[in-house]
Length: 319
Image 1 (tube, rainbow, N blue to C red):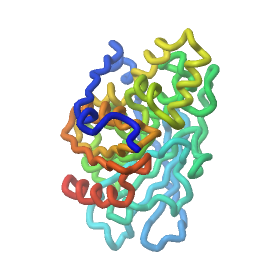
Image 2 (cartoon, rainbow, N blue to C red; image 1 turned 30 degrees about the horizontal axis):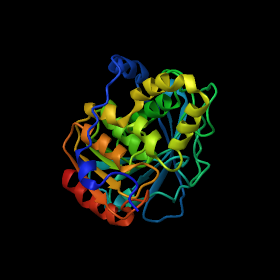
Image 3 (cartoon, helix red, strand yellow; image 1 turned 30 degrees about the vertical axis):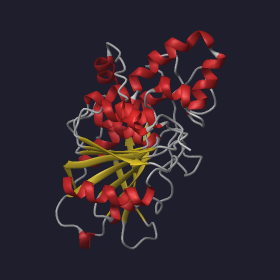
């Protein structure tokens, strides 16, 4: 069953969420020089059609972040490659070396990026999070939420922008043709990168994004991870407004007004994890050219293989 408003009402939902007055200054201070000094170590993934490198680069505060770089085989490379930076869903990591190679098999340089502190859920990760946190609900959504400067996703978004620069600066990559991509949390991270580094992103692939329109999400989401926020606010009854003030710095429905690259979104109307209204809030806020694919009878899996085919054709036209 549909878990949110009818599609006609969703298409009209544009909440125009207020931005913090110091939003630009906050992110300018959070994104220092990045992308230099990455290491690339060739590994044997067992796959003959993909060339794989174990990547380490400096993220927020100089903390080491891990990724895989997958390249098409040398015989198929003709000049600098277009690229895709892939960010992970909630509590997923870069996985094993052979696990995420879709974009490399389509001819792209494919950087599969860890999310710090995550990767013990549906895929494994290799990156810790040295940053501390005050009291929080188990999970990641409320870590350090007392202040934007200590909030967990400040570090995550800074790492993600650094990853984009790592791929753009690689000597086998055309830095002007690098897209950012992800689903769920990965979609929210990719949208943030498109907003925080608009001149560096060639395209955005944003599927059923998490981290958007937090207040509505906390009101209508039926499953984790937004329920972490609900439980936190149920315990910290005196911190409701300060909490949403922090989240405004990280909200895809706020940040996306700064984006300019072409974007392809997807939304699933039976999504109990990332309510469709929150996806449309991010989509309507997005300032660049955009399209959205609607999957009427799908939950948080969205379009899956059907949508991948749509993405392949859409991105090929751009890059």
